[in-house]
Image (tube, rainbow, N blue to C red; front, side, top):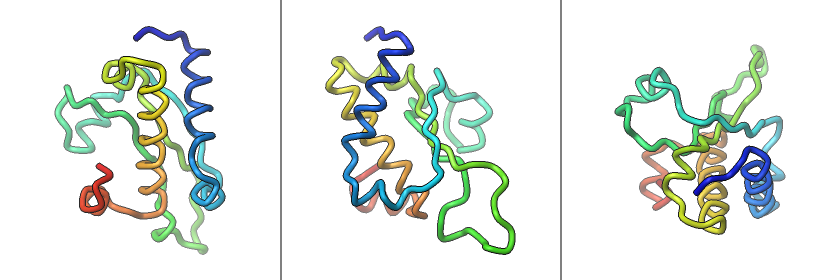
Length: 124
């Protein structure tokens, strides 16, 4: 699938709009950005091989780990990786659904849910 940046951004907005308000109303000050690929350094930091199809990542401090006495200086961000998402999807509908799933997965990390727990719940 081949989409220009504007078309991909529209699909991201539609996918995020599909996430239920019951989840999104608890998400505050989290930016969603798009990069083409994860860096080799990011994959290495995460213990993933260079060819791992990483779709997204949450960067920031999870809510349960935050401290009122030393607030974070960087904003929380969910980064979506455009090329891996495009590689695994064959249709726009499939892409929109995969982006929604990826954003919800990363929001779970924002709430402090570990990758292991997500696997236990069937969301990894």
